[in-house]
Image (cartoon, rainbow, N blue to C red; front, side, top):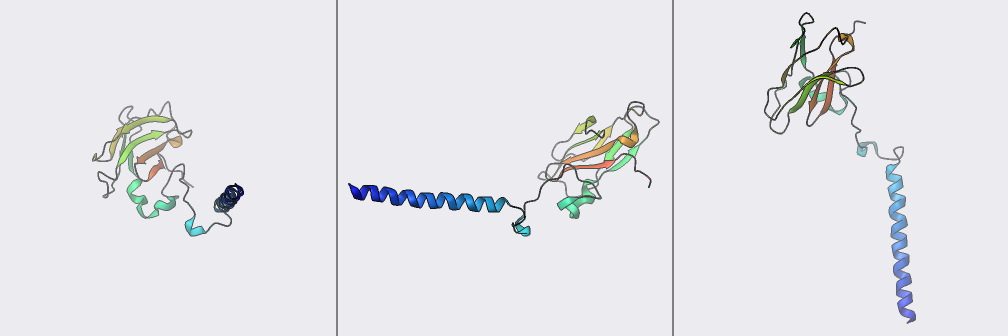
Length: 154
């Protein structure tokens, strides 16, 4: 009978050591100061821009659209087009649209796999100041890309 308790005690001790070792190593892995920078996980950005492409620097020119805006027209006055050559069934644009500075959608066009990433959108210049509008492109693999509708002159 005594040997059964001894065996249970040994198993309990082994499991306790493994349990404590697991959680101690887990806490150390989550500490970003001691973590290996090569193994550091990439945190997605809220939005990517030409100036701040994050980990997508090599492909940023494919995700920044060309914009033609005719402020004299009231409807269908904004043409947004991407010139990326690497779009496919696996890598495609999900949506193209315009939003205000609070990220509220003003006009939006959803795309399907294989669609040419081009959209005709409408912006009412009387309701929305063009200098406070961003054009956005949502890629299925490379997140949200934005560009100001009107570039600020510095």
